Length: 94
Image (tube, rainbow, N blue to C red):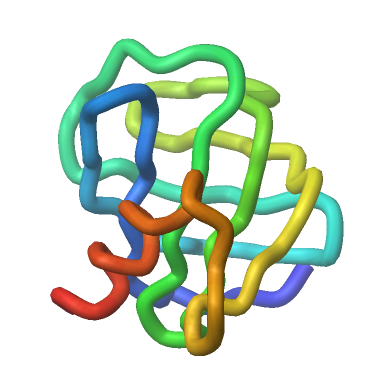
């Protein structure tokens, strides 16, 4: 796992949560949320530095620290599917 400490946003349902990506690997990621959240299931993480939208599933939650299993990665710089338009808007705002 590579230590990043880069800003990101976690999209769960209609909610957006600011977070920091602490560690990341190809199939796993650890983030730290800025506030407590009741999240479960599938989420999208928008990496502001790398310009990526990462489809992920919640693995474990320990306080503000969330471990995610990454299922897919999408570049936000080009064309994106409609379901990722919100992720692209978040990336452009940052």
